[in-house]
Image (cartoon, rainbow, N blue to C red; front, side):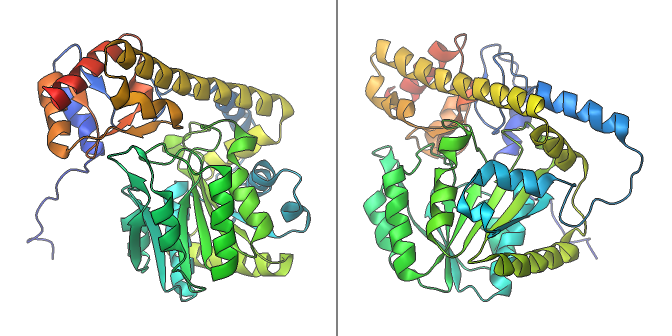
Length: 396
């Protein structure tokens, strides 16, 4: 059956980790895989997560299945986190189902759209590399449109809006929540409002992929795109990952959230989501969802978690400032200036794949193809080497 299968090439992002680990150079820098890291290169377990986990384990009396909609209290807590005291929550217009990470949520969203006859889903380019395989495997036609101009290190908003204005009621538009991956270039509230106006006129469905909630500014500010669209539009789909803001990478914890015209519509769509989940993975993993629920139902743990998340966000912003200031002192300010205006873990350096390869081979600086760098890998010990390496590759 499988005798003729040949080995596939390594994942372009995950493969970097292996090559980096085998590199003997002492001054090497890992700017590849998208995980939060301390200055020591460690992805820590958050204190709030550790405390919640200990509580859960001490009370655990069974290993029976988690309910199909997720760990008890997970969905309720996520909706409260995203919508606060808004009318969307008060009227019961929203519903949530726990999924195996944000990837599981995207796959369910894709299958739900395909199941209901979506003509296509439109995505701005560049985007997270896994968007296309996840959504196309769900049976959707993918349309890529301009979002970001690498040569100008800025959002191509006019081009993006022009493409969005061509969508219709059977189309979906994928939008990034805060901290666009891979560019770090987020839509402003004013630009979001323009997209909402177009959605009202054209009738397409927004799908907001939210993987870095709280990493741009704070949890409330970062929820603007979700709250504004949900309040003004009849339907919105949201996919959510707890990997970054709760540090639950290996627990594969996420959710799919649907906002409908009314509570009856939300309830009906939830049954379809769970039916699709049943044919994919049946029940979601229990542990991560239970941790999130425990944290968000405890005022003490919620405060601790919010404080830790705010500290991580401040660290990433500090790393951006450090890189921009170091480059300016070295006379390369124009090349790096955009990084200080962007959000989250990632930014794009305007580099060709050949330059990215030279950065790795000649200087031990590991970035993803297209020039994406993880700002968590930048620190006071390596920033000068990074600036000098990039300048050597780009101008040397």
